Image (cartoon, rainbow, N blue to C red; front, side):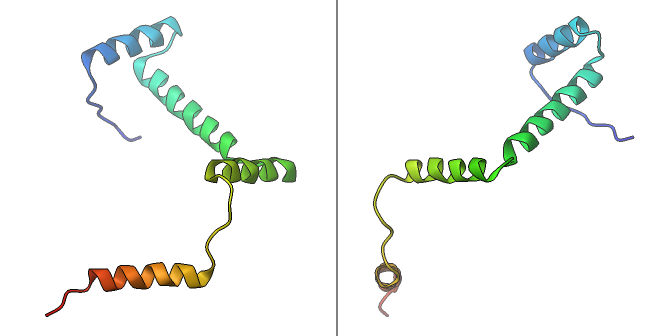
Length: 91
């Protein structure tokens, strides 16, 4: 079994110990349970349960990006090339 040492403010330690005792746990057990719960929540929020969930995700992404269309490839290349030319120094 591994041993982990944490450096935390005294106020946090006091609150964590208080909460752990309220839940009938040691500080170590409480911290492990909290970490496991966080991992569980992250995993469940990362999964799409249906094609509709996936479509909803992409709709949300599109809404964040705003409307409009992306520039075509030639426009991208023009921006890249202008940037390259601006970064070159003349010797």
